[in-house]
Image (cartoon, rainbow, N blue to C red; front, side, top):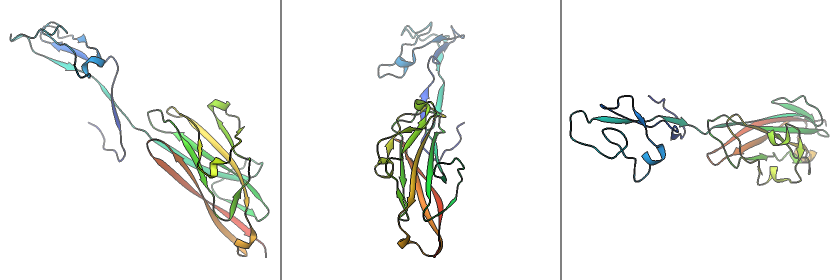
Length: 215
């Protein structure tokens, strides 16, 4: 019995799992999965995959195979820290002359590979992107931050490629306050949105950044 799911799943046949069982060969013989699920099908018979099916009482049988349910899924999250530090938190307070590093994390939490994973970051009007500060860390970079000469993360997004189940990638960018004229005296709250897009779906996470203006 399959549990119900709120999202799409993929059904695939397990390789080398198909077999023919008849009264004459109760232990079964292997059937080629590729042929079994092709338009022409696979041969079966009373004594094996011969195509010879007679009307005798002992010429009864069944075809067995196994299938697996695959479900694409992923998670996206973001943290922020004072620029150049590693004290990342969910919420961060900064002053009008401060700068932040925003770290976005993508993880493949499903059971199949995801291709063309794209990361975007939507800046609030209170913040502006510092050009040339985008870096990426994943298995392709041996977990080390590697600079990307592109500001696409705050525009069309960055294509991070393909990720197997449990695959992880990080994108880091730096931001600063765009102008005090937009801020009232005291604490202002700005919301940045990190988004991961895949061929299956997209997900976003919001994070609040508090900007303190002294008047």
